[in-house]
Length: 159
Image 1 (cartoon, one colour):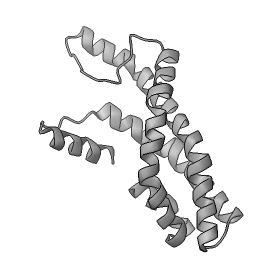
Image 2: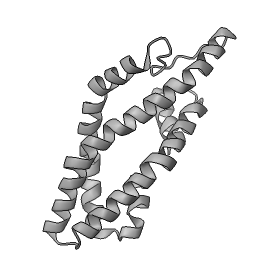
Image 3: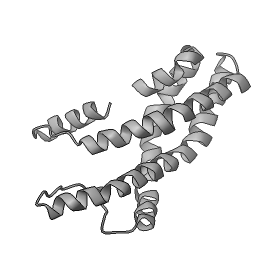
Image 4: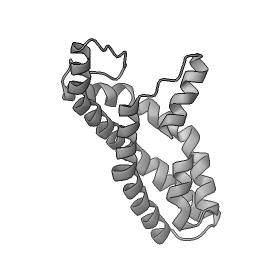
């Protein structure tokens, strides 16, 4: 998914695609160890507590998912991503010392982790939630109404 995203961005900017493999590894780690297990448990709990495909059941699950879960999970995801970026900063610093310069807007190795986290919580998280709602509310409405529980994580990963 991340490689596809990088390809699309490069195509829109009309620049050659140079994949950021560290970024892809970070997103793979987050998807495998944070996102997939969390949403698997979350969707399972939602389906067991609010069963059915009626409009009322779908609306209740949608409210719980996007009104309660998303505003809590988005900062969690951003924090985990920021920590992984921070951990890779010494590697990028070594590359710069060896003459390899990377122009990465998320490269904050010169600032401390706390400052980077608070900046991202203030500047990135609110927009991520709002933009996310434009994508996730319709997508999750379809999922909660039509997709069987065992396929919901797969469906949401494809959105």
